[in-house]
Figure 1: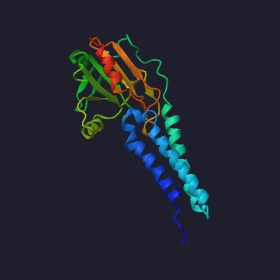
Figure 2: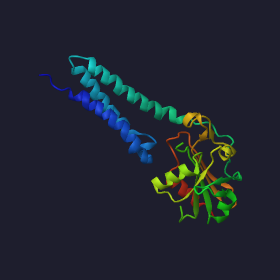
Figure 3: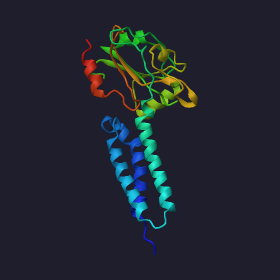
Figure 4: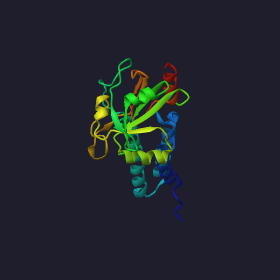
Length: 136
Length: 98
């Protein structure tokens, strides 16, 4: 009877776990989000397991597919974290410290228009404008 | 934020209805404003062209702390969309407001 290739399959499982855990868990806290070191560690262990699994396999077709998929997912993660998410345009025209913030009037979630001038006057000390990408 | 006397206001291209859904799901209670045609986002110089769904223009993440005269007192323009202002940074900046 053929023995199950546990390093290969646990390596694959760990790659998937690491990928999903960043999205749903580690991206929540700045310490594990800004530099995703937990995921780097998990990926390193997973890669070692997959390499070990490929080595010990007699027939290499399935292990090769697992390895391509596993390393592909790791490469994709690295690309998103190290390249894609740093693709932010320069913001030379953004208001700087000491400048007046540009006025605006926008609709709130009750479709009521809200002006910056109102917000600023109503605030005890100040207003924090948080621009975010949105969920489209 | 409240104890620091700072009113947080979130702005994105999302419609008021989408923002309301988000507020409900995430239990946010502060003001969400909608800038669907990116007029204000452009005025703040933080447009990210074609980054949204179907090539829609959206805002790059950015935070501006204003005092009661509407003057900018602190800015955070991230170089990485995963990296946002940490609460401590905002609190430190807010403490300098009078």
